[in-house]
Image (cartoon, rainbow, N blue to C red; front, side, top):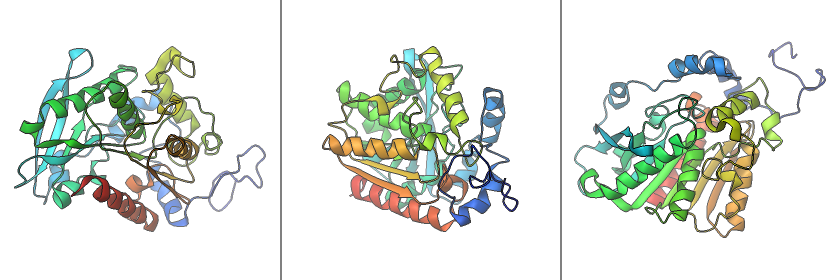
Length: 333
């Protein structure tokens, strides 16, 4: 144990994995994050996380903004009613570029307003229509509930495009962590089912692979945000007995897909100091090998979701600006 930082020290503690260091500015913020988001999440902490990681009140999100929100319902998986929130810029008229945003939370917690402050600026800045989905959570609703609720949302946007001010040819799917994995799976499903067109996929540090095969998966036990045990907890909650078996769908774990051709352009970003680093890099590489378009950014020293937990840090501001520039390029006129 490092006496100064109270962190595991690979140089003095046998058995501690060698890992990239956290960015010094971000490292200071980790102590604050731990009270809300423990590095290791086990099944007994799911209820705590559903309170701790709940999205902010929508009134707080919209305070001072010229944005209108309305809640809609649509038929989700098995025809059950699912809620989506539609955010539009005041005064915007006609069909608009649209972002279908899928929240983070390991498929077990979070809600349609979690992490929304990362993307709601786009509504005012570019007058995009922003739609968020209250997809159902594991373990009460295991796979395929979450991904099929999200696919139903895509079909709803396309079928009701005129009323919702959605340009059906400019729908981007976006998400962070578990939401990033759902967005990747949604792009695959839309391709394979000849579904509504998806013009782009924004995958922030996506949760893509239940198999836990990469080096980065094992480098951050008990430290940072979202470690190997948290990841296992999430995948087991969603997949149950199918976890790490050949029965897992590529739409649940997109890294299992062997054909990534014919997919929309992707933006993938991830920190170098987090467990999803290697699977994000491998997914971008697989897209390139299939002839696709992918823009990959690996942020040195970034922990999982550092843009959410430390948005004012220098590295976070660079990440956010880079992401926004890509969105403007692929989605906006």
